[in-house]
Length: 163
Image (cartoon, rainbow, N blue to C red; front, side):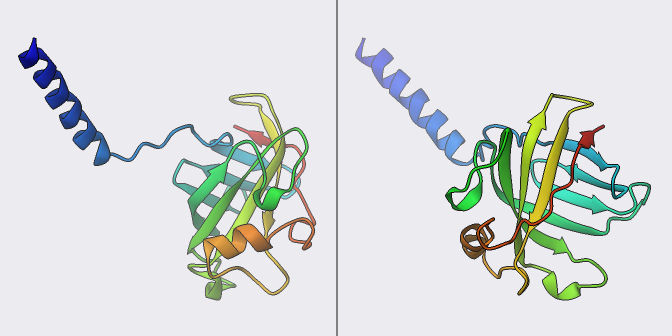
């Protein structure tokens, strides 16, 4: 009996050591996939690690790219709330737009709202948040500063469609 107990403890310790070396990602970002904004002929592709921005939607090269540093599928940053199913991502520029190379490595917030449906044909509205003074040097500053109250999200796409 004592041997079984010790064997069980040894197995649990080995499993804990194995899991400690793994990164558990949890749930997927609610807006994963390829999205087309017909109003501006633009496209975004969202993975669990990155978001790629294309303009026009037929472009083969990205306009800019960001890594996804953090996200929440159920709320907005800084305690603000949105309409319908909503959430946000903290993005860090990994490929800056050609016309604005100084934003490389800086942070912004992308918010979505009114997420409706699942799979192909789902729709959402989204907005990229930054302040008139530019982007943020840190993730924490972006989360705290880029809000509706600060005027960071003055415009949302409407009816962006998942492909």
